[in-house]
Image: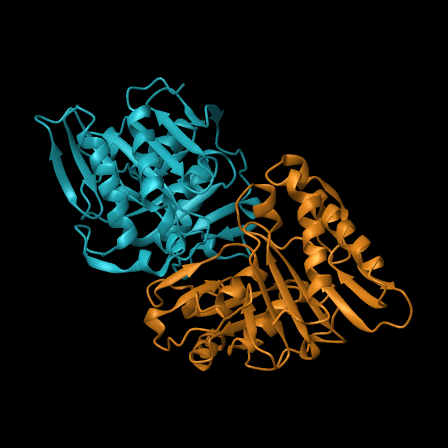
Length: 264
Length: 264
């Protein structure tokens, strides 16, 4: 199922990012702040190196596209764009800089907002696992079909949670089975798609489309559900200045988890 | 500084655990529940295999000791014990079973409770990093001396937090810079010792001495501070049935963080 016209391009980008950044993993210089990026947060050296590696692959692809990335913002490559290429050069920069083996490269192919993503690709840069999904064709981990979990009992849930709203149930370990926060939303959402975790929350108002556009279609194609914190469809435009809240789940617990978000 | 009489024993135990469990990492059978362990929680196959590997090293050491471990509880090896050997065979079992690269083996050498630990040894089973400390001799990562951070401003803290008390500040990403929960307390505490994170909380009343005895002395010898959730000295007896709450920090923020724990 890796016959998509986008698979090779995405894979080539992640291969070049891995080559370019490998020598920086765990090195203090990887975390040197070069400037403030287009997304309004500091650009570390490793992010900059990764983005440049991606850019040169895209410029040699031959297809025209709009390139959207955290550090440069947006850049037109070629003529009238055939598609929008959305990249977080390194998702989990703090982990990468500190040699904590949990970071990835998420790539989404879309058009104008989070509702029209047609392809998602997430490469785990540590072990080279590849999660991908094409609209209507299911979700895959290394070419093996994946599916969300079917747990519906709140006390049995394994949850990834950046919520931290005082009364939100999911942050309370006494109500769910397990809460983890690994620091790379793109990869953590793929764990929901693969059924390893049952839900993911981020209620800090800090998520960017570059963090989650790829995983959104992967979770949906794996049978899961992604909404904003009121249960609404995600319609955020594809640009790096937007910030959003989000819940992803296996679908069985979505409504009940949503209730915990509005109770505050 | 690895001239301690305990270094080789600890290292040999972790080498044998790694050999015995390598083929189980990421495999569903690793998570098969065999029985309820002495600590009152289920014994997964990988925990059992790891504990048996450790036991055979200890039985061949020649020294008499009291062996304390999560699954078997306690076992006397030889005659009158020279010391107590405290082990969590795999700290981060969920991660290991699911191929999430974050788990370790923590070992403490002590006598009767958490106040008389004299040696701590934590091996990161993924990348083989070794953290160790001997009472009065400093803390080390792979023979390089380590020290806690010196950050004292709450808004700049990177915190590992299993608290989840509704009003506890550290769980609120709006107050601290970064909250992470990687799922292996032994290794996460070593991150505090090495200055990568500034504080660690666990307020669930679920920690066992096997999780934290080794890292306690590593954090203290690195210049950090570890107390219960009221600021008191940890005096928990060395057995696997005890449960505790705990705060570890770089010392500069300890009092202020303690206040957030009692405000509830």
